[in-house]
Image 1 (spheres, rainbow, N blue to C red):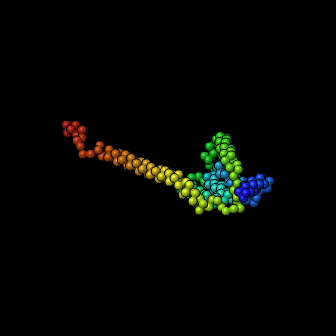
Image 2: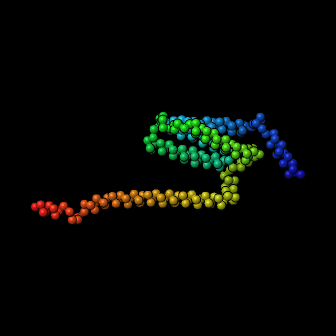
Image 3: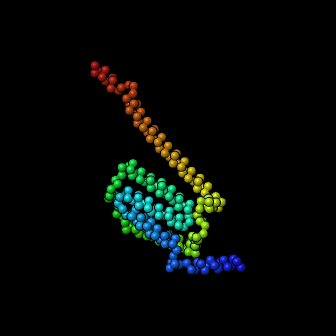
Length: 220
């Protein structure tokens, strides 16, 4: 009886929820989403690389706030630490160290904006359709305990998904070892070629019989 009552209560609560009665968290989610979308659009449309990197910080930070509003605290902090704190900083350091142009650059526009816009709209439509179809009847209780904390994520990762986690770690380790091997092989090849080039003139100018020497002696 209690189970049936709980199911009935949950169904009634789901029916009362709608777009005409949004909560404060839902309004904040929509506002942050609009800001994130605008920052993403400016990131791909501006012709100044530094401005694009800074607007990318705003877009990625907006995604982190969205994760926090969805009670996914662990994913939100991963977003901040990895993307905002590492990728964007790496991009800015790359711009400074390579002396790339920081002003308006005509090279920042490839001239394929219609194709890029069509691909972006198609990809966004496909993602929206997949997400809506997969989570049509899924509701997140924002007033309840957070479901995406570090403890919950760690327990799920090392209990239910431990085998894929270990497989992914081995794959990343193999990729790292392969990159090191390829870099060392390339360096060794360049060094051996340099040695061959440096020894070739020495072989030609070494102490050997000069074919022109007998002619000179005969001339004397």
